Image (cartoon, rainbow over all chains, first blue to last red; front, side, top):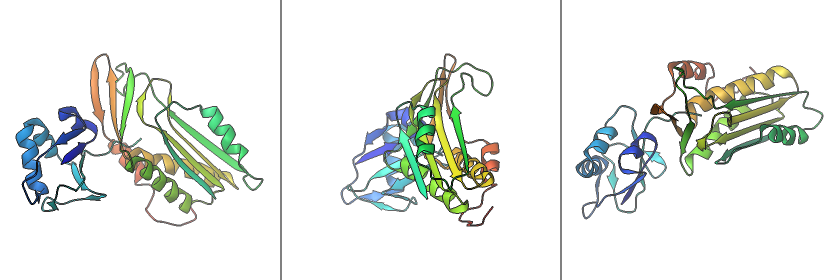
Amino acid sequence: MQVRFFGRLADHAGSQLAVALPTGGCTLCALQALIAEQDPALGAALERPGVRACVGRDFAAREQWLGDDDAVEYWPPVSGG
Amino acid sequence: MRVSATLTLEPFDEAMLYRDFVGGLDAAAGAVVSFAGRMRGTASDGAPLDRLVLDHHPERTAESLRAAAEQVARRHQLEALAIVHRAGAISPGEAIVWVAAAAAHRRAAFLAVDEAMDRLKTEAVLWKREEGPQRRRWIEPSARDHDDRARWKDDDAGTN
């Protein structure tokens, strides 16, 4: 799965990171743990207040189940124009 | 009513936008207000800046501009409303955002532009970074920006 990052989150590993999900998928929380294994600084940045995960078009809770076809993005707080 | 919201990665000519906007108005539009927000060469603490970078989302940024424009258009009695917003790397002196409103009377046009800017400063899906010789810093909306945004209620179709 390609996970996309915006704003300050892209400072760590760029705007996309390939993460191999376990067979059958995993929760968003587990995905975040996999990201933190690959890049601990990015993992810590995802825990900062205001960071939201988007699955498809919706902000998602940590328990949400993910499959390889899901589009996952992490947004820091928006800056506005 | 004519409502437009445009996201662009290229510099734009404010004067040309204004000419096009007023050129499309009919005689019902007795008042036109426009605003341009331009990049300053210094940060809020006076540090020199070389550029401002607005990271954007491939779909959601344009949608957020459109949503702000539609909210503003619903609240005020307008003939036309236009929002143009830059993303990408912006140099000092270049316009970041341009908003214009046309209405029968001036109050609605002034209020519409004011509200559009307050909404854009907090709701536009953009991530802003200042870059200068001494710094590279991500910016988030200030408490003042949130206070300004709180002046406008959501989905209030009042005549304000």
